[in-house]
Length: 546
Image 1 (cartoon, rainbow, N blue to C red):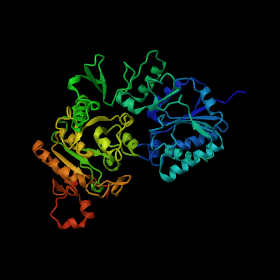
Image 2 (cartoon, rainbow, N blue to C red):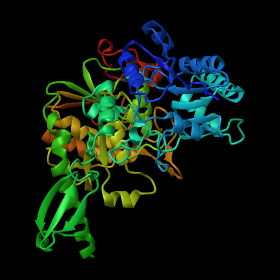
Image 3 (cartoon, rainbow, N blue to C red):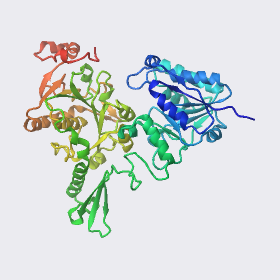
Image 4 (spheres, rainbow, N blue to C red):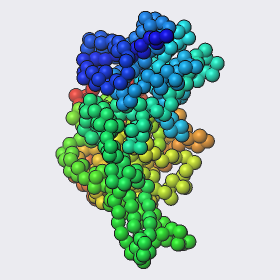
């Protein structure tokens, strides 16, 4: 009996025509392609989020799936993102895996230990094999309804529904022969059946989507072991190490220190290793030595281009205190956020600093303004991490890769050094990411630095005004004030030409020059009786609070 053709469907806009043509051309099976073209006007009307087109209740894709299930009832539907290509014949494998199930979903990630927080069932709806039956129709109609009701993301809603083990849909993940973009690498490129776009690698290599996908096809068919991902060593086929390593030379007369592919050779009698010492002073010296060597190797790539970059310009550093709600963006200023400052909707960050993993929010940070905001992710010093490991988590290498972040090293000594030349020194660890951002800002040599949301009290954060962020511990940021007092002394004698201004200060009031936004004064009428300076409204746009 002749089988009906599998129907391949999806949506595409004018800017994706070349990508869809590449997908059709790459197909090695007798599929029927039935894509729906979306005009630019239709796409703009369907978009519900400025950050990601499918957030905020966009149902343009779910409506397509519902329509195509009805049109092809009894057949098999393959729902694809436009930026996907076929690397091998897939029909036989898909029919085999789908045989006893209603639906096959692409795995969001192969790594079960680091799942995407918005994909709790680990499914990605960018590649789905569907039997067109009542169970699938009901499922997609429910996904659409809940997406509209919650103004959510269709993929996240689908994941949540499938977490219900009693849900009336027989589904499973595709095997690892079908890989999502971030899981495709040198080791499996010749084995996987499909390829999907990976923005991280494409951006790093300055490739368009079409160019990136064409490279995947080339590498899949190549007899040599070619690959373009900067996290893979083309010579040795080994990952570059973000972790510091030490090895003896064969004659044991030297140590080889390796960090991000850079090797330094030292005589054994010049090098201290913690395994050979018991005294805490020497152990501390070892880790201090380590962080300095790491910074000297890495920081020229991380910070070299930023020396004097913002000479005579304004920089705004955004903490996460509640007063951030009353700030409106100063025009023509560079904005640097720390941690969850990117949650604020009315501010567009140019840079984002993170050095303690944002539990439950790292994926959102990695994806934030990918084409505009440069992320800087810090490596927590080992001794400090061991002392505070119950409260903080290090940023993972997966996050660094996903965000295409620049990496910086924190000195393994608390409040001992303030980095003056970031190209050769580790960032001074002053017990707060805000100080790392400040050291960076000063390195760019601005005329003025504005501090916003640096409240230094126990009022919590602008996105959650509670004093606790870690389980069983209150994060009371008033402890940081003593470090700000010491930092001010450094600023006065090292950077006398840079003016520091606090906007809506609370814990820092009186330490630097203080100015207030009118919206903050309106919300705190007790300030109207004081002699305070109001930030000129012509410098700003409308504040979120208003």
